[in-house]
Length: 489
Ligand code: GLU
Ligand code: ZN
Image (cartoon, rainbow, N blue to C red; front, side):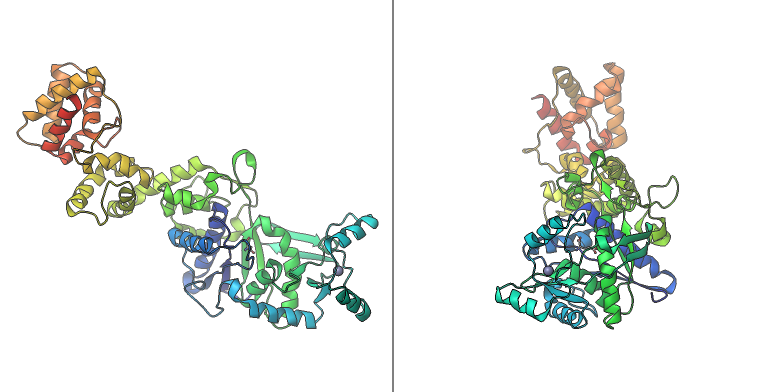
């Protein structure tokens, strides 16, 4: 490895919607690069799209991958829409490059043509009583006559990599030394019979060509590493690349019942968090905890703090359990950490989506929102909670309805509250509070909960709302009185 120069990559396949495992891998790679760039070092984060599987890759998913990275704030130094010295960064546009590498490997006998069908391989394995699965190397040394005979039958070959004998060992950055005996790692196909390159070829070839120094990826791909290392060694021998990257395999993320988190679990979908009002800061913090800790007894930190502290050697190889409750709690902490102006800015799209605010926001509404945010900021755990809490302030009187119900006793309280407030000369939080207390608590002898609960429902529509007296002040005298009257009409 070139000292002090780190190049990592994140290379999803654009199939389906981005999931949390995707985001965790992206985050760790990004943080690794940004950490390397501290104190004058060099760290480059490459974003590559592995879309050679034409049947499964979609443009919609490609857009979602980029959108997810942007939402999380994981910017890339090289990749789609950004470009870079190794462009293009979409593998579907790199066919020429792969054909060229494949030809060089073939010329140097690192690969060979294989004419077998799967059935033939299975039958031979069975006949030999072999416990080893997969290809048996039958075509490694075919004679010219054998090749001619296969071709005459109309067979078209796949290209296989010739695995070396012995064993493959690497020191995993997360898991320590790992060894595979190559007798259990069969010669594998690098492209389809029609010449289309496979993941087995394009993934390591691009890591080599893009001068990736560290491959950090999920443990689910660990079994491809013993195949990729000899291919990297071949590429070095051919002068196509200079070094074999280091590898680190990040722990599995498990869901309910310690099963691997699957795409069927709703909490595995990244956009579920965005759409239900998580802050990217909160989710990133939670994702960071899926295999790493900043210190004992400390769960809440910023991504900048993670960049500062991150060391791949501290990543825990044991499976990490995904806990949505904890994710929510951490998000709530990040909500409190945001400056109020920023929080206001972030809730606006959610208020617009619920029809609470118009787009663009009306000037008077913007002022009202600014005054109202301090009342709710401390109470919100997610951005989506703004609409139910603040909706009453922006609703016009015709469309305002009660979400929670008033009973007869409640209506009596509201009538009394109307009377007390109608007599008020100034409309301030303190005066409103004094008037309601004197009427409802002192005069009628009601407990505060029974006194203010019905008033709250009448003016905000809900049992739970921002602080009542402040809410009444913001709502204004006319609207407040008209709601109190409407609630008992
Ligand atoms: N495209 C592969 C995937 O999404 C990348 C694997 C790797 O990181 O090497 O699974
Ligand atoms: Zn064969």
